[in-house]
Image 1 (cartoon, rainbow, N blue to C red):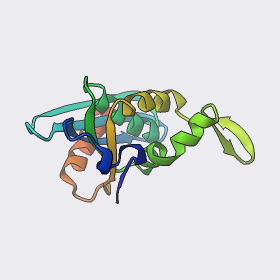
Image 2 (cartoon, one colour):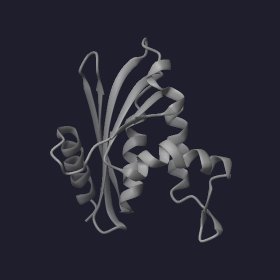
Image 3 (cartoon, rainbow, N blue to C red):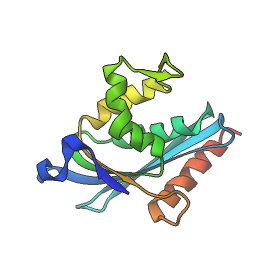
Image 4 (cartoon, rainbow, N blue to C red):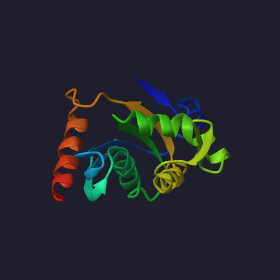
Length: 165
């Protein structure tokens, strides 16, 4: 499944911007438990890559998936055309549909007829600031299906989480 941010569809994308691919993954042993995140950031023109990984002693898989995207976007100092590849439906759905409603409701969601704060709100807010600096497109990859970059990110994220056992 490939989809694009409606605000940044290919028809209005700026072709002069640097194009990069961002592959991300998060891992958590338990849930909650020790967690890890990882990214591969690739410049499509130069083919140069930057990788990163880290973790937390007590986290959740969703938090680690968000951290992977956040940390992967941080190195970009100028506006880019970013192709985000993730196996996380939570991240992709959040960025493509949920976030707009959360923002309009003051970062609140409705659960069981009651208004509640968005889970991981501080990470979603940080991610919102970062994605709005770029032209984004979103691509879902199936986890653990042999996708080379997704497998690399998974290995790095798991290794990062294991430092907290």
